[in-house]
Length: 250
Image (cartoon, rainbow, N blue to C red):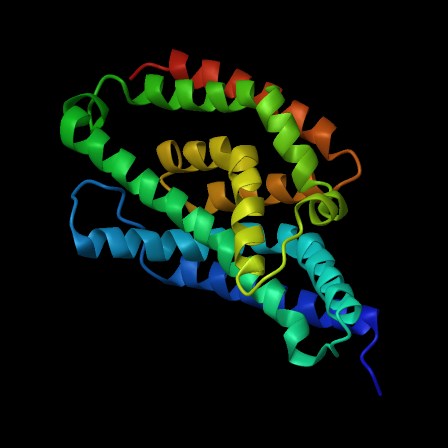
């Protein structure tokens, strides 16, 4: 008896949710990410490890509609070539997920290097007792709010909210096609969500509370019918919060 589409979707959702919950548990119980105050291979690997686990926890649930679409398109591609599906059906989706989180891992490397630069050269201003901590946090939050209204953000969000359009216009064939599509889609997603990640790192130090907050926001933006309105509302809240943080005494 063949597995129906609904059964397959439930199975994929169950695996994704279980993996996301496992990653959340790892973040709660495991070591925190070193925030770039020293540059060496150990701290870099630890940061990237925690960052990658955090990205899976935050982004995997909102990635489910895209995974469903890639599975369906992969099946159709195999049928068009006269090939039975079987395990080969999941090759592209698995490659896609690896490519997608590969992009986010690259973003993590960039974040680590940026933080290391700030700590090394501007520690007297941004460290404990530094006079620019509140101002820097306020500017980061305010700019994240402004970015919510930018054309770049809105174009990227439309791409993230339309898995079918992405598959129809950017589908690729070949051995590494799934991985390349994952990189492509991840690039759209980083353009959509990079400001959230910047606030999470600069203001929250990758705290669980900030990660849960932004994971919920990202999920609603991508999945909810009126996610764009939620995106604008959040932009206003972030700008107000940014002004408030900048105005607080250091």
